[in-house]
Length: 488
Image (cartoon, rainbow, N blue to C red; front, side, top):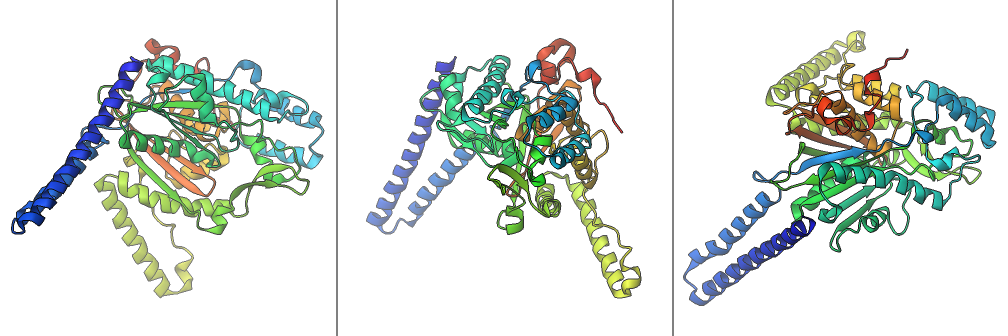
């Protein structure tokens, strides 16, 4: 099967090259005849027509009306039980380590207890040591522990062999070894010689959406059948052992996890979801936004990730710009018209208040928001802790059930950076909520700052949990019946 797919890819590439060469030859011959005959100006239509037809064919072959980029399946790692570290054990571990002062321990204790995280999260083996073993060798072992089980499960569920993969995109923000993480995976699975490897680093929690966008572009631009996107965060080298409170939040929220997704643009390959929309927005040109989250050394020379001053305000401005662009793409016309009417009324009211003077100007309502529930049935949000999830959900006009996947994923697994969105989708599937025709919105926010959205449409009949067993439950196997849980 793998050889057949690889042979098909090469034949398609040769076919597309032949078509391009034929179109070029037709254009050259037509131009030569125009120059030779001088009066046959109608021959100018030949090269124009040839280029238009070639462009139309390539658009269709690259994902137009005939072919779509689809999600065949995805897998989320459930780490081994031995890596579990309850909150009480984690706090005791920090005290026994000897590198945190009392103020730092008190700060992390308050942050962890108010975050909404449960007692079932995981940390890599190196961070179970006293003191933590943040070495390159331990980070490589963690990468192996994350990538290989997740990919093994993906290839098993999809019945697609590694040799059939034409492109591999790996995103990991804080660890970028040589050879790259993508090369480690390609070596392990003996991927074919022409596989296209990409390694994304420093892109933050929105890197998973960027990886999907890169993979989708590769599927559209090249004669490939399958692309794999792997998302993980290597915590071994990301753990901060200093006293700067601005750098301690990563220790409080980030936990072990990994996801792997298999994409295709083949019309014959079975797919669970269709990629409907990709929207990417960044405010990197703004210096305050650029410095909202960055890695640097503290006064003692210890490297950590810092959340800058005013990050909340910068994220709000980023989301305002991002949601405006996204709403134009995904909202139905009825909701667009309703929102436009509300916006005009709001602007008129503000103008009246401004003319009336300051006596009533302070009572103006906040700017209206479109109802994104008219465009998406399910929501996967940044897993930045319960307070931030609730604040974001309220700003988007979402209800408690809409935020359920994000809150419960953070409670059970913590913040796994870009992989968290896939754990949320696994939660929705395990609960049996995603039905054929439903749309799922992935929203990621990362350093830079950047906001990236993916909108998926379910095109396959929903899995029967009773019949699907382990595959239908994914990482939520053995615990989905305990959720949702609501803690005061």
